[in-house]
Image (tube, rainbow, N blue to C red):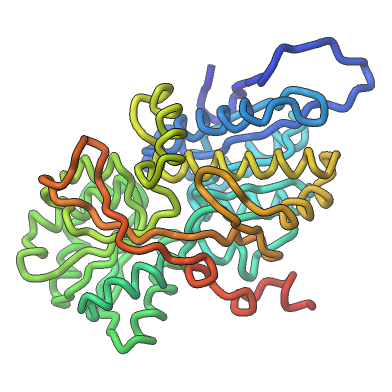
Length: 400
């Protein structure tokens, strides 16, 4: 049974057996994310289910079944930090996965570094995580603000979008995304007309949209996510911003969000994802397993959380120990290979280098089923999609 504020859910990937009193405890993984609010869509309990699948597929690790706990950080850094501290100090958690909301991510990262525990960030997207705040124990598995800014920003500018106004989430993720995209726009001769920041989970974007409308942009950059992006787009259409030629740049939008907006409204929208369920036979096969448990195909947060946990457990097996320094080194040594990623790698700064995909929302008449939503416009190789190692100001790099 799963409850808010970190009450544990225990999963055993095999049958319990009696262990000697002095036996080393089993590997334990904690899924820490938003279970009940704006970032619970395409994450939350769905990510817990995907991590269960990774644990089941891995089988026993260091001779014992892997255990799982989960908690709701409520998008509050103090709550997330308190859960993580309890997990580390009293519950024997070895690694924490997901952590959407970069503010919570920074708090957990600092604590994990202090405790020498592994962080497998999927939903924490600030590029500073593997930049100036990098450490030996933290890895970042999906997109980040640098990759979103460069891949999506460049694609939109190539289509003539050179006058941007941003509506961002009022915390580190939104501000980092505006910062990183502004550098791309201005570096390519475009103009940033302004930016406003809305509190997380805002219902009424009218005042922010009026600010945007007054600048006459041809691109409205939505440096927010999930429900906030949905509300921004719906209300912008009501205000008539799109009828005047403005287009959206939506950075974090999930399948269920597109359904909420409708394909008619969202058609043509560009976005960048690390995973799409309908990409190939391998992604469809795993997604069919996931859909049997959840009721619909996965989005990238559950899939990338599976990938992160699968790679971590592979590294523990290869190292033959739970020792975090040895496991972290082994994670960087082994290639990342699964249904989401082929010949990926974990860099010294913790950034996972893998392909990203530029997607475009289909026209309603193009969709063959409810969840057949995107066309893959381009595959962006990992060495082009992510910030060069020498530009991130990671202490692990600059000290060399």
